[in-house]
Amino acid sequence: MNRRQFLVASSAASLAAAHPGAASARHVGVRPQPVLMKLGDQSAPTNDTHLKYLARYSVRNICGYPEIADGRLYATVDELKRMTDMAGQYGISVDCVAPPFLASSHIDKEKHPAIMLAHSPERDRDIEALQTFIRNCAQAGIPSIKYNMSLLGVLRTGRTPGRGDALYSTWKLADAHPETPLTRAGRVDADAFWERITYFLERVIPVANEYKIRMACHPHDPGVPPEGYQGVTRVLGTVDGLKKFITIHESPFHGLNFCQGTVSEMLGNPSVEIFDVIRYFGVRKKIFNVHFRNIRGHRNDFIEVYPDEGDIDFVKAIQVYQEVGYPYLLMPDHVPLTATDPGSLQSFAFCYGYIRGLIQSLPAMHAAQCGPA
Image (tube, rainbow, N blue to C red; front, top):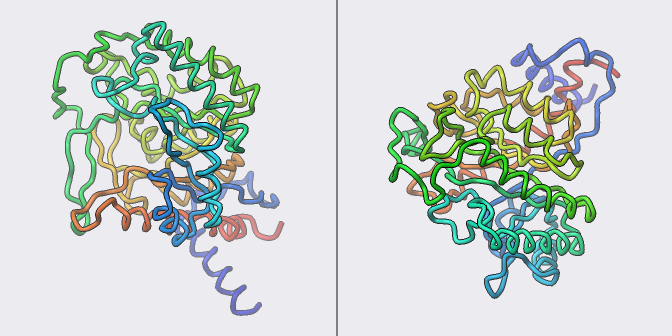
């Protein structure tokens, strides 16, 4: 055994010792699957300066944000290709893209609310724009679109001091006081919300099927009590809701932007429960990208932390993604803030290195668990 082999074997043994529950009988003697998942990023803007920053930290696969002229709700093929060509100069592939609407915004601030408010004929016009966006992505060679179906946006109650001078985004339902009793959507119960989701999927997923574009929907962040919040029942704020969502207009191109942080926030005991949730959606090939984010706490009471200090064992989590054959992006999300880190570039860089290290460690972890294939 040479020095390199000794170091790899020693590292693998240390990982196995630190995470003894990660190995299981079903892995013994099994040949390792190839590692297909990729370190990714979803931060804007997709311009020359930011692409250089991403390339510096070996981020080679991203969700991109094209420059769109004239206030259109879709990018043209030329606009998409300008973005992919610019990224390609730095060895970066645009594997996903976000439309200029259907974001994680509060409905009272949203400029294009018709789909979520069920306002016709405006929602049909906006759906038609998304259909055009799907077709243009296919022509530009971009295989996935991520989107949200949200009325309340991302709910938080403040920030909690963390390590050093970091501040951690916090949600404590007991301390939550909405600005208004209701949003401009009024009361939206579960039946009404599901009707809006179904109306959208029945018109969008057939186009995604035709053009083979994966449509990745983000869960509601965070979940709220069954009676709702600001008059809204968040149907994509529970695991059962996400299970129902993927069955509506079933398709291999209809799935989830699986925000591990948001899903962890749905659970009573996330450090135990999250792994079987990953397996449920992973074996069904419904995870189209992952926001690889950690929390401390549980449903209705949590803080968002760095990936190495939360309640979720990220070594075990990445092994589960590998177990189900997940092949797409692992992206940082909602990193802690500090006054001395404008744009959170340092926090993101820490997360890139942490995720890349985990991905590179997967073969050694497998070897430590299973022994020779």
